Image (cartoon, rainbow, N blue to C red; front, side, top):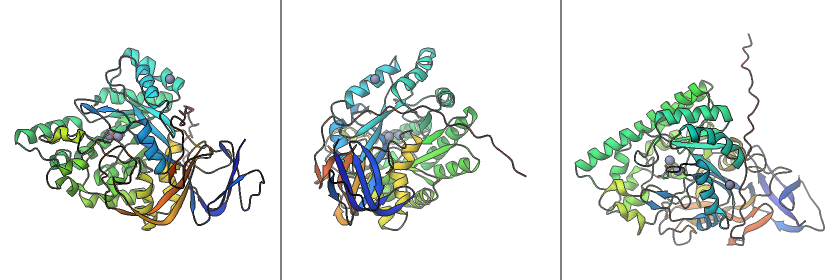
Length: 470
Ligand code: URP
Ligand code: ZN
Ligand code: ZN
Ligand code: ZN
């Protein structure tokens, strides 16, 4: 078995930060220590660099049919971009809308990924509607495929939105099986009405995307999801939290002891709603859901991350070319495909805006970019940390280099980058997946199709009895 020593780097996990060496044998980390010597090992000099566990992106949409089209990054281009960005595992949403058997959707997603993915991956199973048959099929399928998370949309009335009844049934199945239920929290029916009203008034510009999905519809849906999950006794994970209203509901629930997790995404931390007002049709580059908010919502998001009331950073990668599919909505904002290209810059933007600017600590950064997601989605400790026995998924990161984000240099299959022109501090230099380089000195050296599907355990944690001590 091949051996490597990553030598002299500053190793960061969610709990520690220290200088040391890592010995890798085959796919695994076998030793961590002060000065490891092994004459058979290849030496990788990491002095002056940070050494992070590979990033885990729990929120991607690759090769996904959506809004009458399909996303522009598939499993090859999307995962190569992920690798350049320091992400070694993604969890993508397998869509089931329109499938009579849920298993068909999973098979479809396996076919999209196999032979293409260059990083490891899992799936969350989307639940659109449940009937007697799919209700029976679901727990068996989750166990068989090792899928420990399901996803329900409360928005996209015409495509994905589930009824409250289906949402509640999903929570009941979450409770029975132990899987975490992820929810897109926006009131889709109210949004649909606001969109129709705007269209009747002749409003066509991209900014109306944001104006017809105000923060209150996110806050209201977040509260509804929280209460319904609580009645059913399910674990809830709120995807892409964007605003003060939703953060407040999550904090309130957590303070009552509800098992609720929250994710936010880089654009909500650094961009704001005025981007949708750019002249001409340029605002379309920033159309995704929930929308960008006024700047005043950024601080509550940073504070909630710092206080660990929000735990993870997903990319919500869902890319459409500006001089291409985004143009479907040239004369009608409601037809602009929703989504943006984020898989590549998730890691760097959080490091630069978070750690380099002193908003979060380096250990909290690792928690948000990898460890928390690994724990919530049952990948831990195989993934999400640097520990003996863990997969050797490692990012060697230069914390001093400055670079400017641009579509000219990114690797995603789209003609624009929402962070265009932003200067960031720090960059992944080399990335290893299960002990092998996939990025070496900023060059892609991985294998197309070298990413593996990860079966996740559905084992439930033993529940503690609540004890009242007088
Ligand atoms: O606009 C977005 N976020 N597109 C992807 C689908 C979703 O809601 O996550
Ligand atoms: Zn399968
Ligand atoms: Zn969503
Ligand atoms: Zn999404």
